[in-house]
Length: 62
Image (cartoon, rainbow, N blue to C red; front, side, top):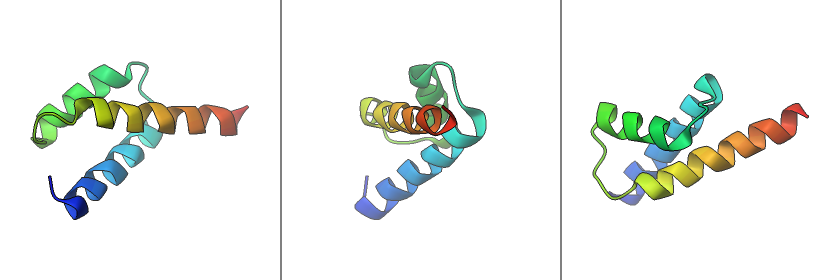
């Protein structure tokens, strides 16, 4: 995945996380990758992005 495209995917995933606030980050990423046809092999990295964003959202709510 190209750097520019990769950053766009991460930002899009962060926005989707803010909107939907998934309970299961792995399942959320798996559905995201399937729906938007993201190249395989990035699931773990994208799951970390979702987990970090959820952590940020939870800490700002407290």
